[in-house]
Amino acid sequence: MLNLFPFTRHRFICVLMMTHFAVVGCSSSPEPSNSAPVQTAYHQLLKSEFIDVFKIWKGTPYRLGGHSLNGVDCSAFVQTAYQNAAQIQLPRTTEHQVKIGQEIEYWQANVGDLVFFKTSRTTRHVGVYLGQNQFMHASTSKGVIISRMDNPYWAAKFWQFRRVATPPVY
Image (cartoon, rainbow, N blue to C red; front, top):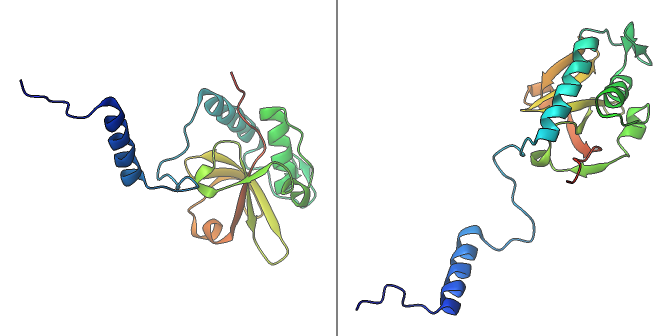
């Protein structure tokens, strides 16, 4: 009778592990994935909550120091969006918002992460990432809008993502 399984269990596991390491490599840190992070039910609900906030604020003109529907700046809009969508109180200014949470890699960004830009040598801008390469923010030229991360202007000004809200553990 022909033996179709010439390896013992131990040898089979060793061969399987060596094949695995030969295929995926032996790296101390995970490689960036070409696919977007998984959109869990939590992220879908969070996005829906942020979109509801956006619908109220859409088109509100930019006003430095503003924090109402008559005019709002980027950090006040993000603070309000987080309070209303995620019930999380953020600091008022971009200077303080960039110090909270944890910096994450670009490829790890998911719905609700803060996205920061350096728009000049001393000016910073903040928005809320909505997934699928989009973020909502208070633009100085167009007011509260949704923009694309791959827009050449924003892509060139990108600084960092920060994770403030974390999904609940069940």
